[in-house]
Amino acid sequence: MRLAGKVALITGAGSGMGRAAAALFAREGAKVAVIDVNEGAAKETAAAIAGAGGDAFAMRADVSNSEDARAMSDETVRRFGGLDINYNNAGIEGEGGFMAQLSEDAFDRVIAINLRGVWLGMKYAIPHLIKRGGGSIINTASVAGIVAIKGAAAYCAAKAGVISLTRVAALEYARYNIRANCICPGVIDTPMVKRVSEEGGVTAQDNNRLSLFGRIGTPDEIARTALFLASDDATFATGAPFIIDGGWVAR
Ligand SMILES: NC(=O)c1ccc[n+]([C@@H]2O[C@H](COP(=O)([O-])OP(=O)(O)OC[C@H]3O[C@@H](n4cnc5c(N)ncnc54)[C@H](O)[C@@H]3O)[C@@H](O)[C@H]2O)c1
Image (cartoon, rainbow, N blue to C red; front, side):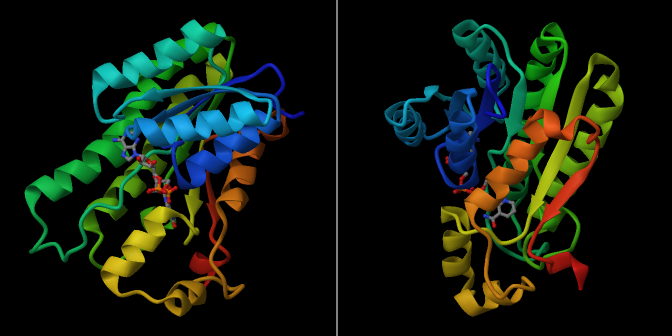
């Protein structure tokens, strides 16, 4: 087991990639704090882990709220005795729309959750990681932080910001044996992609064409990258965006 004895906090773990990572990390021996703004979804993930013989608890937290962000880290440490892996994965797609039509509220909400939420997650986790003698931070960015996507200004800017925040975290905390990396997924088969595709009239073929394999990725393919970054297999990896996109940005 690659995460035996480790404690992991995963946000957005009630669905999609966060849920897949929570299940995989638990199978690899980690104790998992399953965090989501949707409490019922978080409970489902934690119950599935417990049903498979793993150790997890569910907690409702809104990552854009500083009290919640502090509480999720503190509660994880209270329950499990420490924190080793801080996976800031929660995010929203936000409203689509070209810049001139985008409302200020819609812009601010995406930045609050997808960018500020990642910073808050790290802010309150880092002191616990330091106490533990080091750890692994994994942030969810996106290919959208590297290439431009029409109608997604706030989302693209937030994800580019996550890549940047990750680099700064790596620089600032390497001396505490903390590694910080981010994952840039391409199109992955999650409820978010289903919603975005339906709303934008994007077909399955459109999505499939974005990858060189002619298919979209699975949440498990991202969870396995996160497992690598969380584990001691990645001891020399820090400050890096890991692009897992089936070759989308290679063209
Ligand atoms: N699916 C993709 O193709 C894709 C590609 C690149 C990046 N991403 C990113 O991956 C991450 C996970 O997305 P997913 O596709 O699994 O989406 P998803 O919608 O299936 O899951 C996201 C989860 O985050 C939770 N969440 C939303 N706002 C929250 C908040 N304020 N506080 C706490 N939890 C909150 C939701 O309740 C949900 O359970 C997101 O950051 C997303 O932007 C997704």
